Amino acid sequence: MVRARKGFSLIELLMVLAVTAILASTVMVAFSAMIRPRLETTMRNLWLDLCYTRSLAVNNMTAYALVVNATTRNYRIYRSPTPSPADYIPANLVKQVLLDVDIVTSPIANLTAHPPGNTSGCSWFNLTFNNRTKRIQVYSDTGFFKMIW
Image (tube, rainbow, N blue to C red; front, top):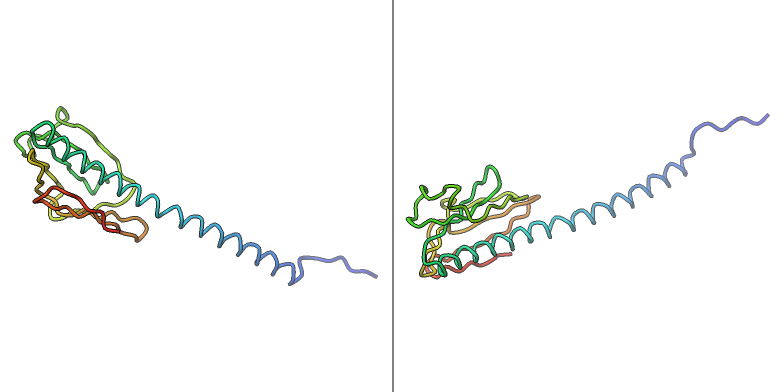
């Protein structure tokens, strides 16, 4: 009398486990490759907006401020003729950007670009995503910005 087979053999289970492990490792490699471009793209966009803020100040002969809000993960560019936080009103808003990475600044969250081209306020920006951090260094005396990989 032939008995009906119930369940799977050990070899069949090991083959399914091996195929699943191969597929999972392929997905993890593809996912980790997506993290780096997100952080680098956000860093480049912030760097371009810093240059844009400086360019606005030089071309329009008035101060402009880039104001970072780390809790809501965004930053805004304001026309700031005085320059003071009293200028950070909707009428003076030039641009607002929402970030998909964490941002930390030092020592304060504002960077003001002045008409001669120099800057004051923040001395660096750190962008963090999935335990990877990139930095933009600000050189106040010249108004230049450097991306540190």
